[in-house]
Length: 226
Image 1: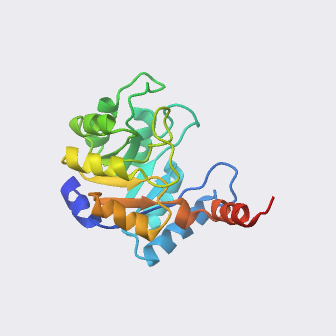
Image 2: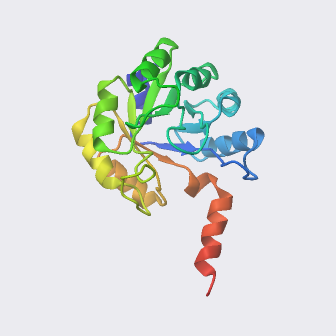
C-alpha cells in the first residue's frame, strides 16, 4: 500500500493503540491480539502495536494496517531507537514503522534520516513521533510519511498537559503537507473530534480504550477520599 493509499484509508479515522506497559497483566501477545480484534469490531481503522512479536501476531489476525514500533528502554530515545529496531518491525509485517523523531541523540549514533531510508527500502512507511513543531517540520522534510504528536509532554521542555496537545496538532497541520496524526492523552471522543477539526488527519487513542489497569486506577483515584 502506498503512502497516499494508506493516508486516504485513514483520513478522519480512529487508530487504536493496543499496548501494555512492562509488568501489566495485559502484556501478553494473545491478549493484545484480542484487544486488536475488539478494536476492529468497534470500527477502528488501524492498530498501533509495540514489539515485533506482537506486531506479527496482530498483523496475522486483523485485516487492517498495523503501525508497529519497538520500545527498548524507558529513557531518552526508546521508541524504535535504531535502524535495527525499525527493520525488525517492518519485517514483522507492519505497514508503518513508528519511530522517535525528536532531536535527541539516538543510542547507536544513527540519524532519523537513515532510519527513514532503511524502512522505505524495506517496503514500509514511516510515522515520525515528535514533540515539537520544529521536529515535525524536520521529520516531514526527511521523508516521514506521517507525523504524530505522540511525544509532546513526554520530552523535557515540552508542555505538561492532562489532555492532548491540540496547539501542536493545529500548528503541524498548517505547516506540513504530510498527514498529521494526533496522539497522546486523548481521553474522550470529543477530544478526538476536536483534534480532527483542528487539522489532524487521524487520531490515535490508547489508554482510554485499551488499558484497564490505568482506567481502574483513574477511577480509584477519583473516588478516594483523604
